[in-house]
Image (tube, rainbow, N blue to C red; front, side, top):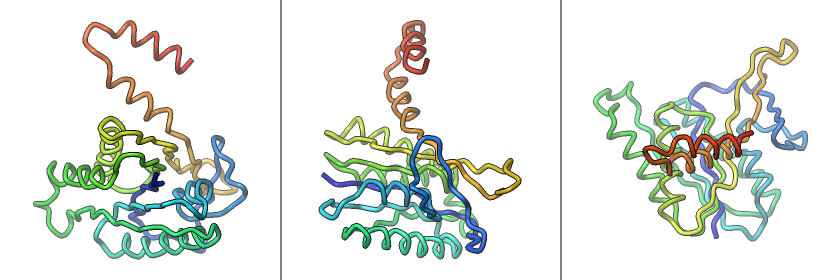
Length: 210
């Protein structure tokens, strides 16, 4: 069994003097301060004997490449603290600024397939859906939906989204890490809906959601 940690790189420059402060009502962050939301999942879910794979979607421009270096450095410190090792894999996101002809449906479909191709039977997945172009985030979501159905014993253990919040005047650069794993599971259920069954599905969803 492998533990897969999947995310995309921040596109904008990181303000290291005033980094984003993360909080959560869904998770205990143990008063730790990480730059990247996926780091909280890594720190909280690994041990020394785990087979760990870290998959990152990365836009091929200078700022995301620089941000990826910081992501690797932060994750490596976490790995070292657990006496663990990991394989790092980058999945390229094409850059429309360099070649607009590449910005079409095929590019996003190819990204989806490349992510899905890495996943195999028995993988347990921890995913961060916070950053990146929305089309790539959606492609990653579809890839996970596909592998859960097509592979054997693949599970989405946790899926998060860090919602940036500007309303806190004392700490304007803050983000709430939200557990969206239930939303992914609801999507799997919704995909089973068939024509004429909406009333039954409505009752099921009402029971599940409350």
